[in-house]
Amino acid sequence: MQKFFAKAAFLPDGWADDVVISVDDHGFISAVEKNAKANDAQLLDGAVIPAMPNLHSHAFQRAFAGRSEFATATQDSFWTWRKLMYEFLTDLDADKLESIATELYTEMRQAGFSQVGEFHYIHHRPDGTPYEDPAELSHAMIRAAKTAGIGITLLPVLYAYSGFGAQPPEDGQKRFLHDAQSYLALIRQLHAQYKDTPLVKIGAAFHSLRAVSPEMMLDTLTGLNDIDPAMPIHIHIAEQMKEVEDCINWSGKRPVAWLLGNAPVNQNWCLVHATHMDADETKALAQSGAVAGLCPITEANLGDGLFNLEDYIKAGGTWGIGSDSHIMINMPEELRLLEYGQRLTHRRRAIARTDDQPHVGNYLYTAALNGGAQALGVKTGRLETGYRADFLTLDITDAAAQDYILDQLIFVGNIAIKACYIGGKN
Ligand SMILES: [Zn+2]
Image (cartoon, rainbow, N blue to C red; front, side, top):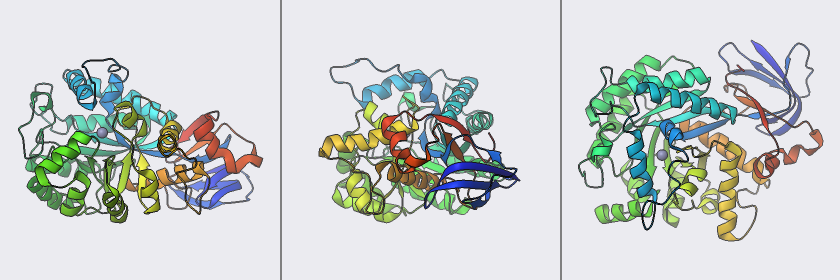
């Protein structure tokens, strides 16, 4: 049992003074007391807020950051970026992947992230043949998280086709490929091996509607349900207009509408990006209880477009943030860019808020904590009994300005994150 004392801490019902957080031997919060005496508790140096889940990561892309910021065509796009990215990953072996991920996860933790959702689609050797242990690279990601001291929700990805209508995969995709059976065997193995490992959660992912067939997706979902009915399930969706147009040509429906109409989407699901939704899709996704996985810096970098945040919030939608391609690891910047994109489009201010929470910083931070934790299937993101003790200390002590701390963290950028405690360990 450990005890921590904070002069100021951001609890689920707002800022509180003189807070003692008790943490049990498994790293979970066993009590939170306000207006308490420090006594023998370890003094935390600065204001305390929950650490942030990072719901979407492709770790290997961190080593590619800054290596695609040049013209390769008359009009560059996501698709010309993807061509460079595929070339980059061809010779990454297991050791390189693990060392990139270890460095990245260490950076993430320093940036205030508690748990990473690793959307893991490189499964095989550079020549496309499976490793002796088909989970070799999954183990590498989990080892990297352990070395960095961050939680991980590993989301091995099912990837089988290159386009809608089960088009054969391209050569650049040979390291990603599974069928439903080999994929379920991988998930079963990982789930059995890691189900009792602290800071590790096994989920599942479909790369996109382009990369699986409807039959394959439904068969896989049946198998996943047998392994763990509450397993997090992630999918990339409607990131690019080309994908929306191809989906309409294939099915007559837009991607989010197709998915909501054909798969049992519920609170276990995370729809990553969901950038291009019409008004009905926005409402339906909010009502499904699933999380919209927003990656504002990457979406800006790739020229994806803007998520319809205002209508989604009004419809009661749940969302969280991910650093995706890792062009920049900066947690407050993800939230800042999310709001600024909306301001620039709507030519108004204070868009991400609710009637109950007029402070944009408080709204953004709290919503991203809740959505991120839900998407990753982990009890984190709240300084409350029963939750994992994942928190940050901020370089600010001015208690008179508590209502502005999160606004300032996100919009001013002059508050440093000093330390990140995961499961109570520094
Ligand atoms: Zn992604």
